[in-house]
Amino acid sequence: MPARTLLFDLDGTLVDSLADIAASANHVRGVAGLAPVDLDRARTMVGDGARKLVERAIAGNPRGFGPDDVWGDYLAHHEVQCTGTVALYPGVEEFLDRELAAGTRMAIVTNKPERFARRISAHLGLDRWMAVLVGGDTTSERKPSPAPLRHALDALGSRTPATMIGDGPQDIRAGKAAGLRTIGVLFGFHEPATLHAENADEYWIRFGESV
Image (cartoon, rainbow, N blue to C red):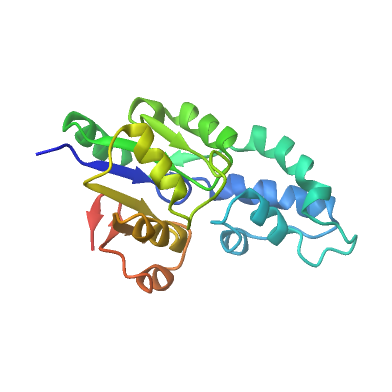
């Protein structure tokens, strides 16, 4: 029986990075003349890549700034901030250790820019489990396109059996579009009802633990 393949989203799935994301979002909000938002509001901006995050963060700003006007500010701030408070969710290390020992091929497929995803991966030691990392700018498309998932599978030299695991609708939709099994993570950044509406094959209430 061939070893299975697992593709993981990063933010809200493997790692709790919300405070760092919020800090950088609030930095560009300040540049654009807006007041900071709390973690719950920042949570609603996450999932579709950094450009969309910035666009959402400065929406309606009084200075008339667009994403291009504050993009450099975001990049410079998050280069430092992305490893500020980020941490693995409980149970991640134990789960990944078991899978690696079983011969499972594993990769990260995230909409976060690759430069930041790699910094986080190195900072938290995810490199020792993940053979491949695909960021939001690694390919020409981001999730929910299946292209990043297919890129990861090609890099792993594996097609089936494979599963996409993530906390956002983008993850489930990308997994289905790629013909993969899907697992929705209910402890991440998105509302459980939103994920349930995507009809994933399985749901986790805690890392590696099905509902």
